[in-house]
Image (cartoon, rainbow, N blue to C red):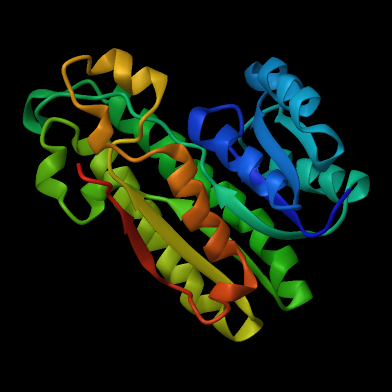
Length: 237
């Protein structure tokens, strides 16, 4: 297994899988993380990417489950030196004051904010103990343009909170040599988004491979003096 080992959450999704492929192609070892329902997709990535990639399924998105998983990763592979927290979700929504059903609100907070929180609170102590490492979280263009999230307040708020959390943690661990940054994509060119928006022009969206290159830079030593940054990756959208 090559070193360093980077943890990629949401590895079974379009962006997560693209990032795993990109990092492996650059000679890095990758631990791809997904929920138990993603185990088949993670297995296919293992077959595709070979020894440089290993898939790990969380039994539950909880702090104890994360602790157990990271112990497994480091026992099987090598100490973790970085992470890209790609896992998240989007469920649309309604005008905020018209939606009294909190299902989407709570779901967006859990899938985006709480998932990042659980990963950070278990990953970062390992990096702090080793006095180095880099973490990248995924926000959204809505963080800087919240009016674009009209009708999807839950998603906009959740992604804004993820970025605020990342910047706070970045300040807390700066002296320990650990870096935390955020990437803000606009619409990502994925099969799911093309199906959901058939009349849109996907050439204006951002390719997963493009976002992967930005994340790779932030994880690398080339970005050793970059922490607490919020990087827009908007394409032409």
